[in-house]
Image (cartoon, rainbow, N blue to C red; front, top):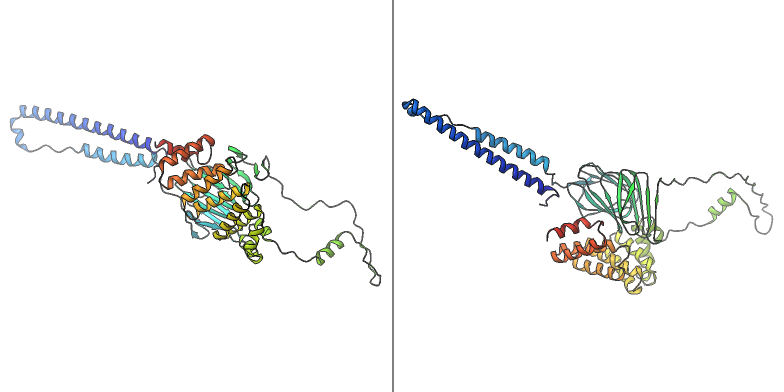
Length: 431
């Protein structure tokens, strides 16, 4: 059973209360015994024959007080100690399982409802996973796509949303969150409440308030925090320039048809131009990973891996991972490591290989090795914070307490307010 933070002071207070009440009860018993003894002695002196009348009526004050004490302690325990029961959740109409991948269909959003009233909705083609859940909240990993969240607020609620290299700490609010692994772009639109975002470019803990929108563009090394939500793009305003009527076409005239303007030219171009089939890259951009991999296989996976650019290999690995083909993803990432050794993309490939080993195979030794490779090649990279935090988890899960504490110290030196800071501090407090 995991101790709830803050439970120890409450237990110590209960023990002190119990000891004080035991002493009081003992004192009451001694005083009662003394009074009964003196009363009995005085009675025997005044009435010698009274001693043969039988035992005096027993007193039940101490047992009754004990029952009252037990009831009071039970009530106090329920008040002072929060419930340790973890939240449950449902995915659509099915029971949700911690650690299981959740993928929305291509044509409809997918609701996720928690027992505390919190609700999430994955947009079409979005992928997420509930990594952990306890009585206070849950940690949700948004792998790709967009989700809408309405988080129920309580005095102890704590929710974390991990998005790429970013962590969004939430107590109670309503927001939309999206992440594009291919473009490495984060977008957070806050409707109600407030959150704190940590990660590359934004810093340790950047507050985002209601009505603000945060966009982070990792590849461009910039972010934008706007005070009002961006307007939806509407149709362009009507032109004040009149459109000339199309010139009549003489079928008997020789030579090319005269050029036309306005809507007629547009329609003609639309009719004549053949429809272009979307490429696998287009499909990845639209989060249609299954369709993207179908297009990749039609083009020839091995041939594509052999000639793809470093950025395309990472995009291809994302498509393979999100479509449930980890072997294909590993092949693309390994190719990026070998063909573009020393590049930033090769370092990112190492990080993704580590994450796959951690999340999908529970191979923590292999995962730690890949995270170390990434940190060695990109010590200040966009995934450095998460890589170091994952190393703490790897060592803890392998049973290396001293190794986990050493990694925790390194993490706190660099990221004292990072998403793994609380876990790191708790490990150091156990020394």
